[in-house]
Amino acid sequence: LAGLAGISAKNALQGRSIALLTRHGKGELVAPALAALGLSLQVTDAFDTDQLGTFSGEVERTLGPLDCARRKARLACELTGLDLGLGSEGSFGGGPAPGLVNWDEELLVLWDRNSGQEIVARASGPVSVAALAWGSPEELQTRMAVFDSGQAWILRHSDGVSKGLRGVADVLRALAGNPQHPGVSAGAGKLTIEPDLRAMHCPERQAYIRQAAEQLAQRLQSLCPCCEAANFWPDALEPGLPCAGCAQPTPLPLATIRRCPVCGHEHREPDPRTVADPQYCAWCNP
Ligand SMILES: [Zn+2]
Ligand SMILES: [Zn+2]
Image 1 (tube, rainbow, N blue to C red):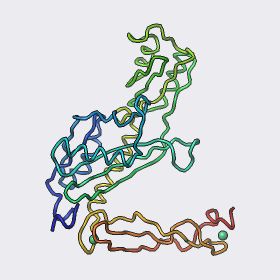
Image 2 (cartoon, rainbow, N blue to C red):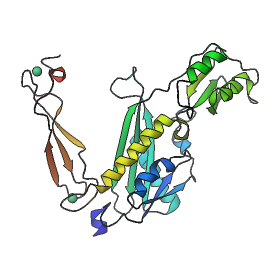
Image 3 (cartoon, protein in one colour):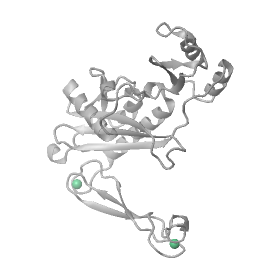
Image 4 (cartoon, helix red, strand yellow):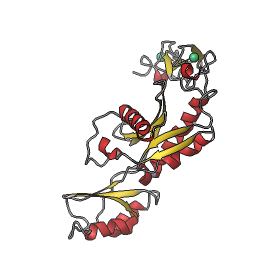
């Protein structure tokens, strides 16, 4: 029965281990939410995930975020021999106001090698970290003080990047001339200071990764009423909530749909709202 149901919180998960491949400290972000379900995490760093692409651009990303997270989940299983693998991937850009608000989406893919079933959990939201403009060490200090002290920075210069710089002193040291790049001085034209977006260096990302882990735990506990498979989750929306002004359908949801990934059972939940604000109506607010 366990095989038939795939990932099912009821019959297959208590006491099991999930493999996570990371060199970026993601284990401690994800483990608490899973521990609450009796799941433990086995972290491996036996593969350099930077080979799949880096935020700082030395390795180009060829896979989209979802496929990259899937790949990491499968690698985690291969490297540990465990049947459950977890892949984590974040991506910046997108969101409701691209170009105006920087946006982070964090994905977690839990993959069950036995059944082939996967559960994708997501969390996303705005991030404030951005490249720093500076003219003097004092100005740099002022600009950096706005951000969480756990945020690290990268210095991009003509010869490459210096990563994981924590605090003003670290950045100034790198600017003044680190061993590899002597003579680099503050304000030099080709230098930029950007946030280091790797998970262990970016507290804003860490918050979204924790949220995604909480959602994963909730998905694992949302069971299909017919077959008890996990991930019975309102992933699909049925658009068409009528406009309060003209009664035409809007893009807002009329209902959310839960569909069991194993047996296909569907449950439709009408949206608690009965009408949409005319600001969402293509006729009233074109
Ligand atoms: Zn309308
Ligand atoms: Zn089902």
